[in-house]
Image (cartoon, rainbow, N blue to C red; front, side, top):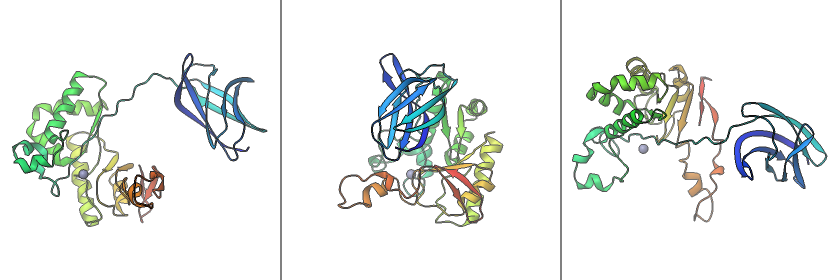
Length: 296
Ligand SMILES: [Zn+2]
């Protein structure tokens, strides 16, 4: 039962005396049990699977310390070092928003005049869909109330109008950026559909976007933010790297995230496994120039 990998995790399960840290063990031909020992003492055991999560019930040590353990699967043994993690943290996911100006709504309506449009404009609008000004104002108000609140803002097509229309908020926003509580992402003017435009247009999108985010807001954008664009120019990651960015994030790839789940299996009913996407969730996106950005 060869051990192909031992992967330390910061995941926990409920144990009899509180949260118990998991150690992930990968096996080529699983059978029997996987055991984990610390200083010769058995601290966890689980039935073997291709990916086995062993609860370390008797792990000794304090959070932040490193513990040497021995993993045993049949006749195989492997030494590993794990970082003892601290349970009890709560992660709050703060939702992001973005603009679809031109093709779905006007920039003005997305910014602040959506409420003033007629019935037809409200019919295509979900209850949670607010204007950019409302959302930025709510982020800033929540940040005032809650010192732990952190959020991201991105596109210049609402940032600059907000900055221009609300000079009274500039100090507050700049302070949140300096403290790392507001992260400015994108480094572009908007989310350009770079498969439809020229490289020069993309370069200008970076020049004006990163210029505003860095030189006016005082931010340091690191991640290109291509969440909902319809396609990607293969040269984009090289241009992003040239603009000083180190990563990018998308929701639509060569396939939309729903695409492979909907269309790549027969019969076309229900949902397919998203794992049929043709590349991993994180990868190095390289342009023909050889430059690129780490991408999720
Ligand atoms: Zn969109």
